[in-house]
Amino acid sequence: VQLVESGGGLVQAGGSLRLSCVASRRTFSSKYMGWFRQAPGKEREFVAAIAWSDSSTYLTNSVKGRFTISRDNAKNTVYLQMNSLKPEDTAIYYCANKRSGGGVSYGYENWGQGTQVTVSS
Image 1 (cartoon, rainbow, N blue to C red):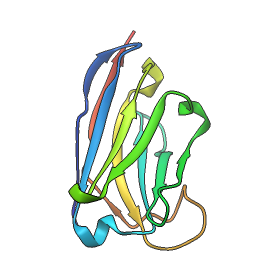
Image 2: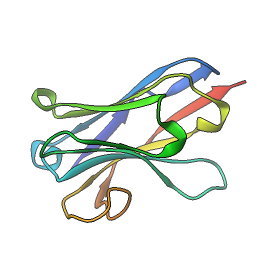
Image 3: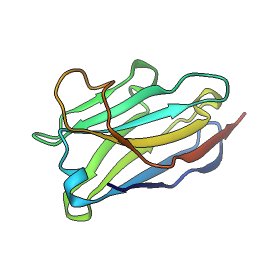
Image 4: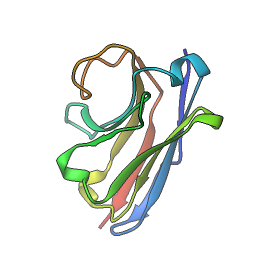
């Protein structure tokens, strides 16, 4: 199982970044692929998920209207497009997969190494 994130960096508030997560084919076809983030001194939190079956998407309230999750099946890649970034979006962002059912914000099995996103004010 391998999940590799990329695309993080330093951006000014109001700017945009697109994160990518490349997975093995078997991992990519999990029930859900998700993005999480962890800010310094805070617990890891759910950001977004996309379903394998119908590409339904789920976003936490704080990013709705600003972030979009999508997938490219030909490239086994999940994306997180982040627009109108705010300093409070600063965190390490992780990609993960979930094979089981239940809620989309928990129960993920495998994790990437993370990519740092820093938003300056």
